[in-house]
Image 1 (cartoon, one colour):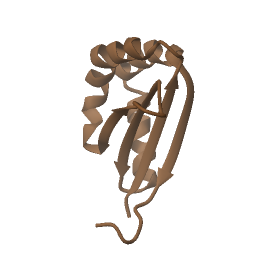
Image 2 (image 1 turned 90 degrees about the horizontal axis):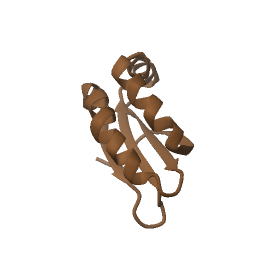
Image 3 (image 1 turned 180 degrees about the horizontal axis):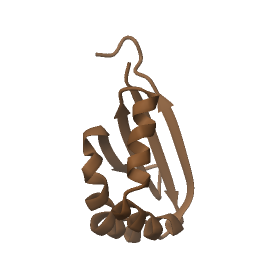
Length: 103
């Protein structure tokens, strides 16, 4: 059974445009190597202001940990993270499984 990871980064007010620039120039070039597990990135609009939200899909928890270990040891990702992390006020991760009635 697949598991899904919902990651929400709440940024300091006024830093979203800077975060978008960092993602475009450093984040996506590093993360796209792992996009087969990435469902989508979102930017909060109403209610969820100053947030970058992304959803990932993995076969199981071992697979999830293996992918994140690869990402967190990737030099390009670490370069991105060093620029992005100072913009983050709070990070929240949720692990989810699909409801049994969904396709």
